[in-house]
Image (cartoon, rainbow, N blue to C red; front, side, top):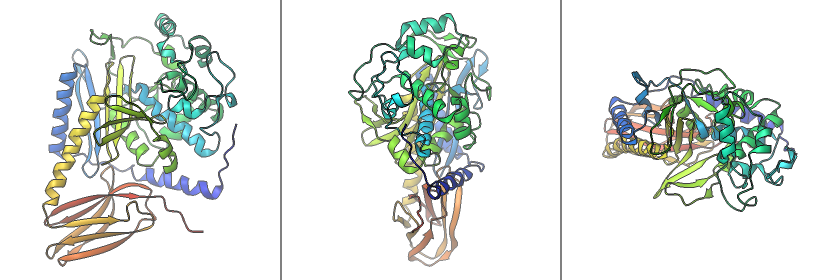
Length: 473
């Protein structure tokens, strides 16, 4: 196994920045304004009706506006959904597993370019030269054991009986789809193996590692690992059936055979609010160093209608010049999607208690959220005020240049992508004309911020990226 060394001088600042960033999101979050909340709830109700699903739970984080959460539909007859209910995340779990692998890469305990033979013994139909990177982006060619009818028969006949990952690899992995690196094929087997690697390298179970390195530090509230940890809330009844056919209530069906065997492919669960928060923290740099997040965003190009690429545990969806990053999931009567829009840092999460592909629903909610942000921007730009933050990204000292048409009170604030005010930079009367404000960003955790200029004439907002500051030698 390759050993990547990390010096103490390099590790301590990163550790400090991580928890400085997390500290900023502990505070009470601001709910969106009533008009935006009504727009999002109306859209969710429309999507619920059009999809004919039992229920939907969703949450949106809109920078500068706040956080929204809402539900539409039922758990089962006479019991409506509520926003505190927890749902299975299905394959959105892969974003947690991939982040865990990247943390071990960051720690120098593995390299994503290592081959499987460094961690696992030989298994039938699995090429030991496959790399961790190829597992992460589904270019390994390994057969998806979920597609083996014998595995499904075993699970359905013995739903309370857990298998070992080793048993799965020895008995349910058929001939590879292609040679390693020769194509792209989504396979849950890749993430079962990644879970095994996490356990071998960390010396902990997948649940213990995920709890210690991700869930507890991030204060993830309702999120837990199914069948390996106690539930953190009420799960609604989950509904499952053939596409286009009737859905059956499978709430009483044990899930031990599915998630007791391995949780690293699809075993996480939680509520929509905490899933959106996970997406926000992951993509704004609170979980991983920027360089590792950039590695995760190295997408294999794909030609789907909306699905255009797969990175290291991440999907890319796009339409025209607009894109979003995240993942979707669908397994055993629960479905999920979480996506982050890099253009405006909006995060959307959607959960359902019925098997479905929620990608289009998440995309539609994302579009509605952008419209709410765009309306405010158009109104603000009607004023005579102007605002420029530079350099962008900024590292260390930056500047804010702005213009006002007449003498009036000026307030300039900096807030994070949850809408929380991080710093008030100016609040005083000023004469009309052009002004410049110098800002020291060294004490800020790296990530996406929003600079807001408020005057009697309105409000102007500019997105400002703060890069990690390195102390000169």
